[in-house]
Length: 299
Ligand code: SAM
Image (cartoon, rainbow, N blue to C red; front, side):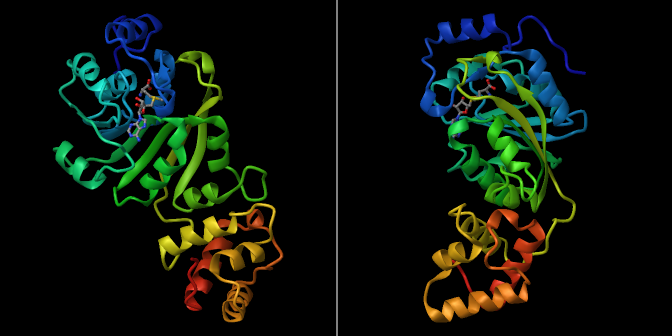
């Protein structure tokens, strides 16, 4: 079981002490809001189900607050941190945990396949657990879900509003391209919400922990995942416009393209006057496949 002790990094006093010792000026531009509450960390670890053997990829370990808890439960932890200043800090704070590998890399640029192969000695289910930098939440999540890593579960602390958007149902106000892209392959749910007060410094927005569990079989069968993601982005590009307007904008205004678009919509039995936000994941998949039949790709 996970032991906790007074020396855990996750306390207000220890975090302050580390920040002072290393004279760290936390960077807003890198989304540096550190967690200081051991109970919240405990809950994150529970949502990630780390009582089963697993390897964990963490994004942005900061001073090692969450990493420490993950290291106690996971077989191995690979933590990618963009800010070089954190490396000496992590060397000290994580010194009791030989199963942690810290790499100074930008998650958006790193070769994730190579890094995981290098870090993990044993093949085990892979989970991603992180308190994400909010300024890049969507690009990071898209990178993870489009990556070739065989991730079983993603548990991330993100802005509450984004967590709600990702797990939203069709027709709801929050439903958008991100909801469809994620939910096609992952079961999404908001595990719990987190008050601002548990961070140093406090963020301006509310937070929530989102859990994404990879579906055993995708919710949809699509001919090409890339084309499917492109269609979703196109359909939601201008939220107030009809699906037709968005499609013409993305695929082309010329008569030939318009004819093909109409045919694909007709084959998919979708009314062009609808708005993207009213289409279900299944309808997006049918339309994506119908567009592929017409050999249509957005610009
Ligand atoms: N894990 C720590 C915690 O829970 O207290 C810190 C989380 S803080 C919200 C986000 C961390 O992500 C910071 O340490 C920041 O430097 C790092 N970060 C920001 N952008 C990053 C990127 N593109 N790649 C890797 N790490 C990044």
